[in-house]
Image (cartoon, rainbow, N blue to C red; front, side, top):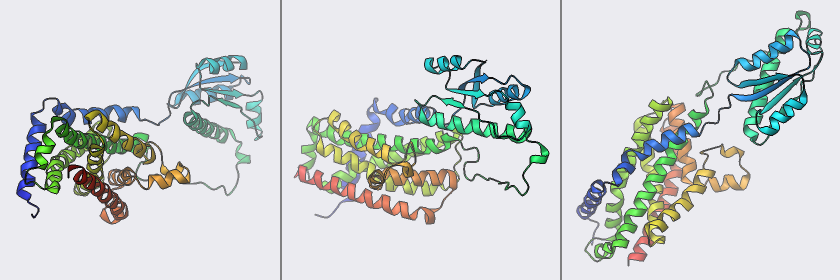
Amino acid sequence: MMFSFRRMAAVARKELRHILRDHRMRPVLFIVPVMQLIILGYAANMDVDHVKMMVVDHDRSPVSREVAQRLDAGVAFDVVEITEYEADAERALDAGDAEVAILLPPGLARGLARAEAVDVPMWLDGTDSNRGTIAQTYAETILAGISADHLPARQAPIGRADPRVRVLYNPALRSRWFMVPGVVVMVLAVVTSLLSAMAIVKEREKGTIEQLVVTPIRPAELIAGKLLPFVGIGLFIAALVTVAAIIVFGVPFRGSFLDLVLMCLVFLMSTLGVGLLGSTLAQTQQQAMLAVFLVLMPSFLLGGVFYPISNMPGWAQTLANLTPVRYFIEIVRALFLKGAGLDVLAADAAALAAIGLVVLGVATFRFRKRSA
């Protein structure tokens, strides 16, 4: 018996009607994805600003007061107190009332006037290493600017290299421009995987899957008909969260929307395959959800959603190369920020398609074997 598109379409229409009639499913499709994007987009902010700082001023000079004012002037630091005693800074760091303490030594102004090296100790709260490291860089940049301003003209080095830095793709270095495309991928993966997994397990719980199997419908037609509505739903969710990312967070989309649709179709092979595979391992919807999350969570952690893959150890980078999330995130970020075309995305798209075909093939085989 040959594959029948008519039978597949009948299953797809039945599945789509069932989804749209379920009043509990409508918020999942139309509201939850946007809420997830907004909440995670605002929460996933790696920018460091308003760091609470203590200034211990031993110099008590116009220069030391200028240092405190310059540190407090920007959004990076909030100078909560200026004191003469180091013990006050220690107590503030211990109590969490300050995250950074900077010690301006006696003779600071005199040393700068003489173009002498002046040590400026800095204490950091290292419980949040990322925030502490970035705060240190900010403070060093501000101190370097103040030192340059007070360096005597006769001491200015001749032939000094003067770099002109141009930041491409993300000129303001906003962390949300890095994070939000990753959140778009997360939302699309979670919703489509869970929907496809629970749809098939729900049929098994109700006992209707056996009735479908014994009908003239072939397993391939049944699988295609079951998953086809979720392809449309996945594209709708992708469009929804992409528009929300552009409007709510101001992330630019410089690529082609058609390229994004094509890449989403390739990615959906993996997510729907994960959902189908989870349904073959579960007897209940709760078990299917757990099986899907056991696959998705490591994929998000290794796929570069929260931090660059290059920062991971070698074995983790090897595992990351086996996850479809890793390639789709690079594709989405390149489309959003760089405006890359299919010629640039070809390698990642090929790897994404290969993983999707393998996952979907294994899931289909297990479903056919279980239904036989």
